[in-house]
Image (cartoon, rainbow, N blue to C red; front, top):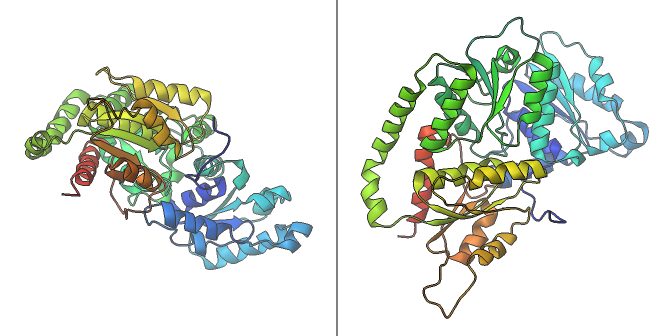
Length: 445
């Protein structure tokens, strides 16, 4: 494991919690922290979330206690009480959530006791201890979602047949979060399921409120969302299964089979997969001649977070016919998670396996690639990274320039794309991803 994080690809846990609440419908975050925290998060989103920044009562406009020297010395609970009262009087929302920063947690402000003093009529008030020193923004997502599961989601008298919740896609940290959630909704609805994704334009706060009725929590991540799923299991008895992020026909077909088997659905899942696969390849027919004649197969370097590292690599190998040579996951993971991800990334029926490394340092990708393809200037037939393609974040643009390769940003931070509803999940998402890849490959013509 490296001794430092070079150019971090995340916010702190407070930033992840704030971003999550900004994406929840009818939800107002109340920031109990020092002044400047929201601004730092806002500019982090501006530089990394594909031009998506804040929203109603988000980032620069988030209600906050803005504690200073006086509160650090004497405590900030009175200031927080005042802020909660004014926010609930002025702002329009059904759910208000207090999240705490580093300073207020270090001085020991009892946020729970302050929240307990309020009994809002017709509205709800919750809290989460999200001090930024606890970890990164992905952890912040799990902290605040777990808190809502325990404080806001009521127990259900009975489960609703065919209802599922989708976890593991972190708003703003995934620049394609809205489109990816929509793609997952459409995919799961093929099985006749009722799908709560919580953050899409089709969701309401009632989706979260009623989520304890779900038969299953579907965690579409090998890392993110598991703590939230555990909170559902412990508090409401909702079981969960983890799946890799599905992009394209191969991964999506496997995803549908596993979900249908887990829920024992009375559907012909193979017929559903056959029809969707037929549509997928029918859409590709006009492209195949050009793909072959122009020799658009590429070697690829993938530098990404845990979700995209696995999903992109599997799509390139299983569906597009590209050759992933190096996969660098930039998240800090446990040894167990690293082993599990490596197994998924190297389990290819084609006998092709990329080199897999776990390293937060962006500039190390070139060194790893040079180890795979050492320079042999006197051997004109030496294997080389040509033609190449770099898939990662905006930080990998420099790597692509050094390699003379096209580049596509899919993982945080994304500062060179504007994304509103685009997504890569499911069958249709695979087509969209292929469009973006091949579009970038021929952009210089």
